[in-house]
Length: 114
Length: 109
Image (cartoon, rainbow over all chains, first blue to last red; front, side, top):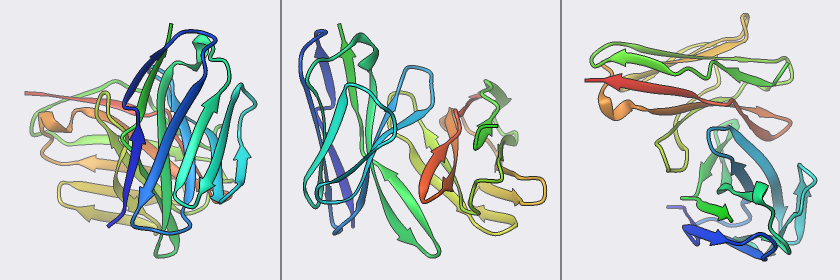
C-alpha cells in the first residue's frame, strides 16, 4: 500500500529564516505530487505540483520554491520566511482510480512564523 | 464564479439526524467529484468519490451528483459526534484538483 510522509510535523521559525519541508511517498512510482497551503480557517491553496523528477509547476507567485530531486521526494523551500507564510502545509499525491484520479494527503506540517 | 463552491456553515445537527452538505460547481469542472473529511488539526481524508449522475452509498454516507443542476451533495445518516469535522468538496479541473472552502459540521450529543 502507498504511504506519504511529511516532516517535520510542526515548525516555529522567525521571519527571515530559511525553510525546508520534505515529503516522501512509498509504495508507488512516478506519482504526481502536490504542495498545498491551508491558512487558519481557510481553504486549500495549491502552491506547486510536479509530474516527474525536476518538473515543477507553480500556481501562485510567492517567495516559496519547490524541488523534486528524486521520483518520490518533493521539497518545499524558502530563502526568507514572511509572517504570511504561516499555515498548514500539505503534500499530496494522486493515483489513477478507474477513469479519474484520486488525491491523498500526507499528515501535514504546521508552520508558525514569528 | 469559483470552480467549486460550498456553504462555509457552520452546520449543526443533533446526534442521529441526517446531515446534508452541498457543493456547486462551474462549467469548467470535469465530472469527477470528491468529498474529504478534515478533523481539526489534521489533514484531509478522502471519504467519497462520485463520477456518475445519481447516488452512491457507502455505509452511512451517500454522495449525490446532479449534473443538470451542477451540484454534488453528501448526506450523513445517523450522524455521530465523531462526524464533527470540516467537509471539503473537490473536483478535477484540467487534471488538477480544486477544493471548496469547506463546510464545518458539528454533531451535538
